[in-house]
Image 1: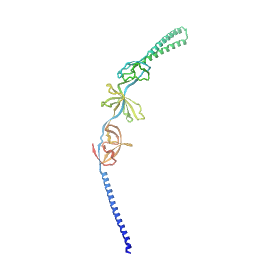
Image 2: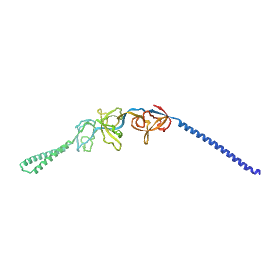
Image 3: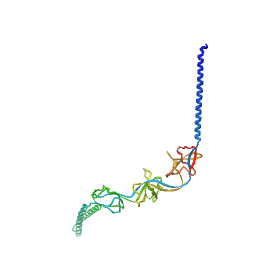
Image 4: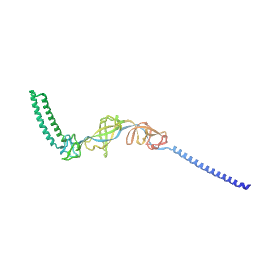
Length: 361
């Protein structure tokens, strides 16, 4: 009997040992997990309690020279393509490429021998018509012809006279003259070339004065006036040039929401060339009590722009409205007040209510 119970007792013993081993393992695993969780929470709490060191500045009211930085194009004051109004052989060229010419100066001459022959013929017809009209007038006074017959003779004379004037006008067009003073460019013809009105002979440009054309955003449209002064530079030179606004487009372009403006600049020394770009500094109204912050403090967001200020040792998010931007700063119209501490570094990693330690500039 006792021998038969021995295997059963051994099985129960092994089961008890297994339960004890499993229980001990579970307890050890639980303690390990609990310790890790406690350490993680402690680390997280420590990170939350640690303040982030950032740079900042206290906002003060200041005078702001509201200058608008723009790009524009430089154009000649007057520019025209020189062409012949009549077709024919070029008889002579009376200008040097790249030289200065004056108003009315003969540039080139187209052969007019056929026109002069037509003129001689027209003058002969005009003389005959004039004599017929004179005789008809004498006969009309003697009532030898009717008024109608005299009118026909007078109409013939007027027609011959008009034909003579027309040929004279065509002959005048064979002498191509400069419409204004300026510098003429490279020519595309030679003596003996057959020219037509489609042939561009050369460019004539007046560079004594230059036009600077640029566009400003519509929100500044009310601040720009005629006779306003501006300065500009060109690529490859640090020299500043001055210009004066003389014309403003009467309406804003709906496609770009900008207003086109044109200014005039002297170019007596000839240093500026038409077709180049101008970097323009346009002075607007001076703001005496302005709030200006560094550009790195501004964060663009979907609904506008924001920045962070420090308040009670924590970062606070503030939405702001901005205006003119310079290389290093930007004008803030609303959202800030004098005395606020604006954070200028590490702003991309900040969140509202983050603890911060501010190093003031």
